[in-house]
Each structure stands twice: as C-alpha cells, then as structure tokens.
Image (tube, rainbow, N blue to C red; front, side):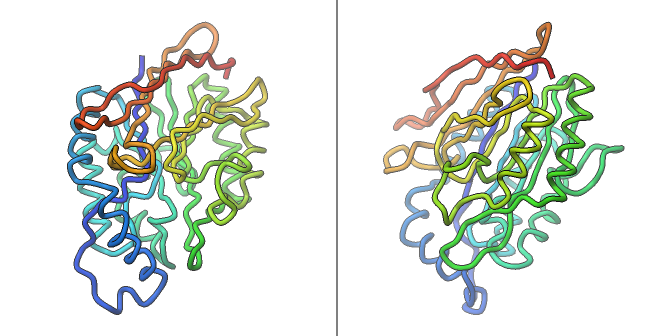
Length: 298
C-alpha cells in the first residue's frame, strides 16, 4: 500500500519586510489583502498542527498543489522552501506552483529555482512540465498552470506543449501499469471556479485525460474540498480539491484540511481509499469525509 497526502494553498506568512518599490505592481493589491484578511484567516498555529498531523500519518509521499506564497516576494520563497523541508525528504515531496507563486512576471521561474528539489523529474525522465516521478506502483505527474496575470485576475494556463508532454507521459505510465496521479493548481473542470480564476487551456488538459487516462487528478486554487471528475478512456477520472492548508476553522471558508489516499494495487487496477482530514476548533485534524475509488485498468 502507498500512502499519499495532498495539501494546497498554504499562503505562508507572515510577509517578509517589504520595500515600497516591491509593491509598485499587482503586489500592492495582494499586500492589502494580506493585511486586511489573510493574516487573520491563516495561522502559524494551524501550520504547526498540519505538519504534526501529516507526520502522524506516516505518508510515503506528500503532494503540494501550489500557492505556497502570497505576493511572490523573495523572502517568501525561502520560507516556503523551509516549509517543504519539514514535510519530508526531497524525493518524498512533490510540488507544483500556483498563481500566487507566479504573482508577477518572472516569479514562476524564481519559484521553480527555489523549489527545484521538489519539482524535478526522476533521472531518465524528460525535464520541464509536466515532470514525472515514479514511486513504487505510483507515478506523480506534476503539471504547471502558473502564469503571471493582471490585477484582479487569477487565471492559469495549460499550453499545447504541456498537452503533448502530458499525453506522452500518461500513455507511457499507463502501459507500465502505474497509478497515475496528476498534480495541477487550477481545477481542469469547466465551471469549477469563477471566470477570472479559470484555467485557460483546460480543454487541452481534459483531452489528454480522455485519450490516455489517469487514476487521480489533484488540484488546489478554490480553497474547497471538492470531488469532481473528467472523462477518461475507461470511465470518469476523479478530480479532487482541498481546502486551504492553514485556514482557521472559525471563518467563512472551509477549515484547513488535507486529503489522505491509501493506494493499493488490485487485479486489475487500483483501489484508492480517500479520507478528508480537517482541523477542528480545538486544533486537531479529524476525518470529515471518506470514500473508496476503484480505478479502471490503467
């Protein structure tokens, strides 16, 4: 059995010391939002409880689907790198960037450089996006939807090049009989989020899945623990979101949570036991949802 934990949208704080010239861009909007809202809604105490809860589950791998930072200041990438190190060794943690990690032009590149150890393909696999990491019966496929956008926009993008590379990877991994888990920040389901937060090129992503299949698609962005699906060649493929990982339980948004998947090979295919764990007012993470997914034959 392979145990995988999925978290997203950390929005790690506090913000580092900020110079006026650092805010002469879209960052000023995010800075104001942090001071007025997110600094209260997200908490270091929840972060500490999250790390402890994840460690207690003894996962084989942790997947992080973006938005580790807030406004892409240099110091934020350092903080996020330290956080990733608390989750486990480099080869047991995989991450993809979110729109906040690519908040301004050049930020996506800086995120990739800062967190390269968690976004690097295995030796022998192609570099770039998406990357592939094989872990036993499971293959982690990390795609990027992170692009810089204008004020009041939080869209993502999935290119033709990524579609081609994703298709090739899924085909190869499916032929190898692996459980294919695809990571992407923006949900690839039409209507899953507001227009100004949508994934441009989502149809390309869905086309790759429809033709070549996958066993799980994990995303962030919405701060919602949703369970959707897209069509695969042998049936629907689960598309699973999660609440923001450090969201306090006393606000208007779903409390901080993580998805826990126990993946077991069966004949044929895979049985995946999914549990949603969310923080309670007392600070402990408790199970709030459970399901069993039996995948088609890869």
